[in-house]
Amino acid sequence: MGLEALRHSLTAAIDVGHDEWPDIVAAYGRCYYQQPHDQVMTQLGRDLAVLQHQITVDQGERRPLLLKAAGQLSVIIALGLVASGQAIAARRWWRTARRVADESGDPDAQIMVRAWDVVNGSYDGRPAVQVVAVSDEVLPLLDGRASAATCGLLAGRAQALSLAGRHAEAVATVQQLARMAEQLPATVVDDVESLWGWPEHRLRHTESWVYTHAANYRRAGEAQDRALALYPASQIRLRTQVELHRAAALIRTGHVPDGLRLAADLLDRLPTSQHNELVRSVARQVVVAVPDSERRQSSYRELLERVRS
Image (tube, rainbow, N blue to C red):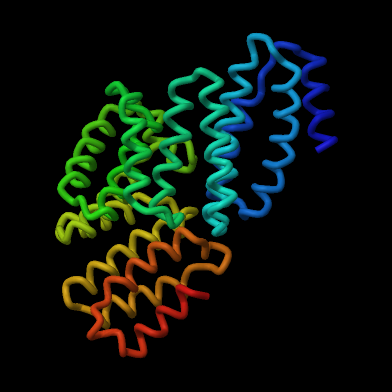
């Protein structure tokens, strides 16, 4: 941390008006999917300590920009905590991210931190009705603007509505999302390797989730095929989550042994470093889809053990 603080001081000595935090935030958006989780979190802790000091001492024009960067980096901390199963700590960071973003006065930052909170609400164990309620609070801020943040919020809301059993609303929301995604600028859609972009595979992932839960398996299958064709190789965990949707669909359409076998194979193929709470949450949905009459199968018990391990 001392070395990073020194580097910032040297940069400021050369150009006092230079703000490198947007570049740092953009870099974290890219490395989030590409570097080991522990490395990202360690470096992020150091950077946030430096940023916190700068926010404390800077009460001038740069302060809102510093606060916006702090809100974005706090999102990454919260995402990492959710992925590692630390839901209580994650809730604290989501609250901090919202407060910092609100203090920045940047509308897109305010929506963005809440959007990621809503998306992760479908994985962190919160009741779906609570997650939907959070999305209800943010909807008035959208104002019809198409951005990565607004699309993220609608995607998270659609998934939460599905878990709440409100399938007609979930489908209507994902259709609204598809229309909004068409309005995104190419720079956002083409940013396929970054947390801050909103490429097409996120739309298809959301459609896969919503249509699987709504029992529209034809539409779900089309979305899964499209998502798997679009996902970059670096995002193997997200590819696995989409394929777990397919496993759940197989089970719900009566192909229980095939669905169980597919889910087990997917978890076995996924590198251990990629096994996190998000994957386990989706895998649990596969387990729940198995009818009671089929739960005596050894393949069911084996999958249950994989999910619990």
